[in-house]
Length: 569
Image (tube, rainbow, N blue to C red; front, side):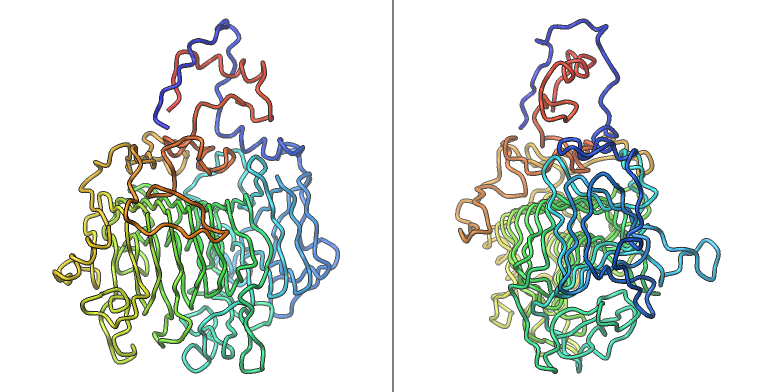
């Protein structure tokens, strides 16, 4: 991982040198390994022009009633809200690019109309099969993005995002969480177990998730909404209703039969990934440069997650002061079941040291546990946040008993539920590693004792060997003048710690964090945006297939000749 691999042994004339390799090449040549043409040469197609498109009354959009097959010889424009209805499938070939259109102006010139923001929505019973490969990602991005690596990471909220609605469990009840109010505000239920997607302004059935328990429907925790594999979602998170935004990826009551792995989000205006209940599992996920929480869960999510990487925007950016994980169970504090109890192993979450809140957040924490939540976090690395692990403790008239996040965690002052666990994690350069009610002053001796006994390690400052959380990026040019290194060397011990169970989902990992110090175990695709930008050191060995055409030959040699005498990090 940290070895320097000299290139000077190569013998060639400097006259053979060609232009230096640039990030734009990997993007413009997206899909070349699976026979796709260059992005710039692809024909443009509006999704609303596909066969079977049927408008939905009261919605700026409609359903693809015959499903669709999207191929990488075309660029597809998500020009409205495009729905995939129950019984239909959207098939997306590896290397395909889809672009979301910015909403047209509303009553005020220059201000997009929230009701007309574009998005791709997979309805309950519908499926998306976006099964990319390591060298042929599927990319969702903004229409203005030329997909050449130059579209500024400061561009966020340029389209709505990807929404998947399923039939798995949630804890919504009409009494506590309804009736539905457009835009959210915690009032999402239209019936017991049936919610309307946050950010949508109608109660159309196409926008609903879960099951109508009142009408005799049942949850299906094994529900299968399809596959997202090697998928990149960029520059999303636009406002869809006044006062409410969508996320890059919104997953509502999505079942564990759905596959979501090797997925990245870039520059989301709201949360990178938000889960509203459900049982879906996440693996090999990276989130970069988003403006809100990296991972946000609520309404009883009980899935599994492993190998998660999050990286905030540069500290000099004017936005972003939210959490790594925002952990909720029910915004209306009704204490309904099921509680949110996901089980997370091997995350590396890097903040940007901001201390002043600029959004709806009250803590700025690596893990912000609130709203009676549970959850289990093991063998992870959290760095450069104001607060490390924060818990809500106050119990008001609305909250039930002593069931807040603090009480679900504390063994000395808790309720005995033990559904919130934070064990064997390393907190690096975090101002307040443990806080209650967003203040270290509220932490008692028993809390500190439990935090230490649970195997959590505090590293003061940016001093962890082999690990460097600092970085500097120009949010307009995407140029990094300083890069972080996310692989501690030597690897951090998990001796005496819980280990991921061998259950067909988790993978054995004898280290803390998302990445091993063994370069051969890097799970980020060479085509992922973080790799294209070269945002992070220590993740890739020296490449030989320089032009990414699938073979190492003289063409790679010619491109590399300009770099003789240099070293790979």
